Amino acid sequence: MSEKITPSNGNVFADLGLPHPEEALAKAQLALLIASIIKKRGLSQKQAAHLLGTPQSKVSYIVTGQLSGFTIDRLMRYLTALDAEVEIIVRDKQNTSPLHVALG
Image 1: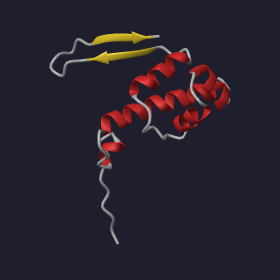
Image 2 (image 1 turned 45 degrees about the horizontal axis):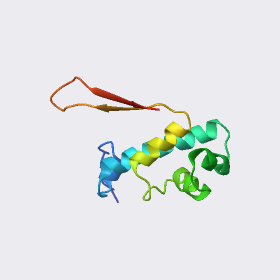
Image 3 (image 1 turned 180 degrees about the vertical axis):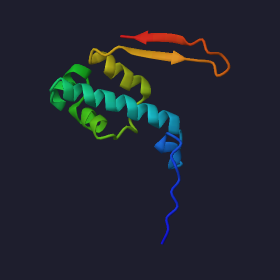
């Protein structure tokens, strides 16, 4: 039996046909960064929750990838609360000159 393998387009959420795949990918990438910082700093979820000003259950959702209740904005605010510098780059598809916005 032969299985057809379809290469990814680079966004697993789009590959799965989920709604708003670009937003889902961005949220997943931000959550991964948050989880990585928490781990690198050796923080418990309770300690991280205190720094983020949110309940421990929300930290648990982030580190386990349950992101439906989070906005990109909130995840970026959590990163800045963890002393990360967030930079947003906006680029016109026709123009190579980006606009940079730094948070934190």
